[in-house]
Length: 374
Image: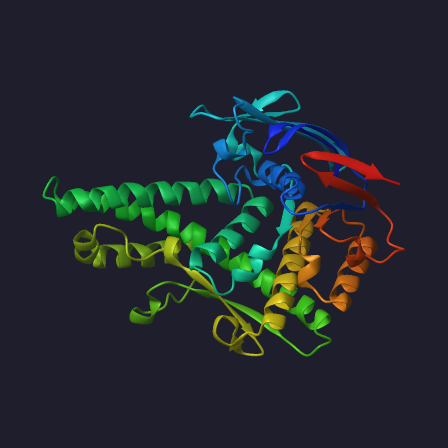
């Protein structure tokens, strides 16, 4: 997978940007708050249909009605043109692939990318939602049907929760929950099975990367934590029918409790991931060095997993992470990217983070303008 050109119009602080990328390493240098990250954010938005840090209208330049992201890319050696129009009001965004309007759910999996930013270093010790978001985003790019299944599950959760509140307030009868329990159980089973299958693959890939980066000193493992399971019997199988039946029994058994609280107290929307280095949980015992190494290993394993599913590497976006890695890890990372011929966009404040002999394109970003240096 390779991006040939990026065109931005009224996106963030860019009035207009027409940028031709190199096929390997692309370095964007400049002071903070000049627009370097905005270029990476545009690509990541085109991949996932959402921003990690902003609502859609916040991506549109001040006092402008619409922002445009347009990317020319090749996938499986076939060229595509992807355009996304982002309104500053409540109108829906407009997505066009090769000139044809497509729906949001059809966008996922078209242009794959992996973003690694300093925020990812906080994923291990932050709220469970960040870890679920990482896993779900990876699965959706590798298997776009998962995005549809996850969206359906979240819709059913919202509907069941609304019904629970009405039952609690005496506005409808409790037996109306039955149909929602049945539908939600099937949806929950589908999400859980996909998550666990992907996690099995990530476990192998991430551990191999962790050992390589740490010179065989550390082993990384990831466990799937089903919320509330400490009080329940664990499911004995992850066959769809078996697990759907298990979820149905759990939802039904917790009807009274859920009605009282007005929300669904168990399910994939509350599950979590646990990360371990040499058997010790990172959240409690991980050092800063171990967290940096584990984050890098996790992102590189995500890169490999997407390659295994699509047959080619996704675009790698490294946002100001070179300062977070020591010189040895930086050199190992850059050598890996060049060896595997992975198109990479890297933002940094200092050219000194990169070896003089590194080949690739270098751009300077200042106040929303970009110039290439020879």
